[in-house]
Length: 338
Image (cartoon, rainbow, N blue to C red):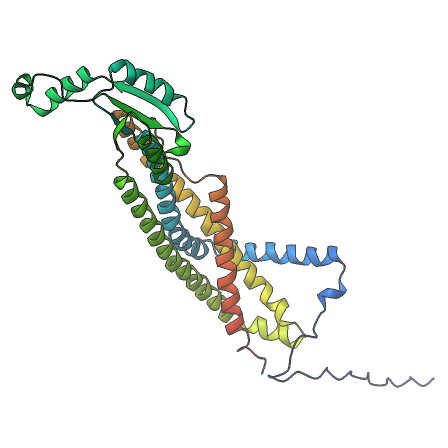
């Protein structure tokens, strides 16, 4: 019995390889997957990119630490500025208006006017300084006691010390209150010093804008750090990218792990920045509290709250993702299979 001759197997010709200028938008279609599969693929890529960072802990931690320091500086300065503004608002509420009454107003009339003004919603408290008390205070502070003794009568009027309500302690509201007090028949002179408040607010605005400028520059530095890190990662995985393009991988498919790596860098850097800010405020909290106690104040240094912490983490993640996107968009097109 003759042995059957084997026919050589037909070889299927390989698919044509796209040229360097060909578009790769028609590779594996993720749109064909169901939503669960699409989300599962993204989750796998997200975890795989985190695992890649975990396999190089030292370099990944150093990159994230640099990002954290760059994010911690403007975050800490903005938090300190918010604490100063909160302290300044307390000073505004402690500002007082001196209402000098006419000379013919007696102490009883001054007390009656004080009770009437205390009922105003714009006023928190009113203290009466009688004519004799005003003379005794002036004698004690001025040093002209002998000259005052030579006077036949007390030349000083009664004074009402008015403390505005917290809602009316700002510059505009206090100025409106002063105009109302000037319209009273018993009023001779009203004094309110708001220049220091305006200077303080102007300094706070200058400080805020300066911190925003510094924060913008440091944010640009974060973009450059993440972009350079992703660029090196792309160069190290050049052969892998070429093979993926040869088998039809789309640019979006190849880009996705690098974008998630940048996202992880920014998120870990934001977390490190949050820890640095909390640590710094913890070191400063005790001395600030003791200093405030010396001035009979209950002021406490407050670190960033929940909203500020979430903004820091989201901002770091966004900067990391954007830096990776810029680097991948620039360097991925330069890699084409030969």
